[in-house]
Image 1 (cartoon, rainbow, N blue to C red):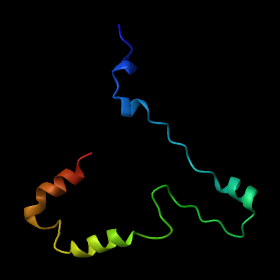
Image 2 (cartoon, rainbow, N blue to C red; image 1 turned 45 degrees about the vertical axis):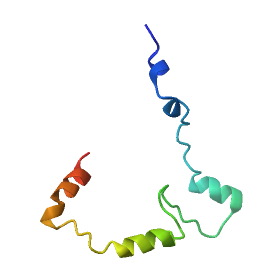
Image 3 (cartoon, one colour; image 1 turned 135 degrees about the horizontal axis):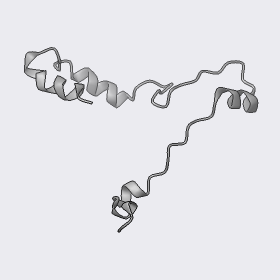
Length: 79
């Protein structure tokens, strides 16, 4: 019987586990800041990229409440 891990795609097999960022307590202990703001992993203190903002500003005709876009809404709502 072969090992299940032998059949995993090489790119998947080489992934490293997620390493969470440091806690607020660790940051305070090391740097002694006056104030700490904890951001989630997907938050950016600089805001969106100018390229992304430009593309989004051009997409003003995409209205997901349009009945013609029902299939897009359904795909977005699937888990």
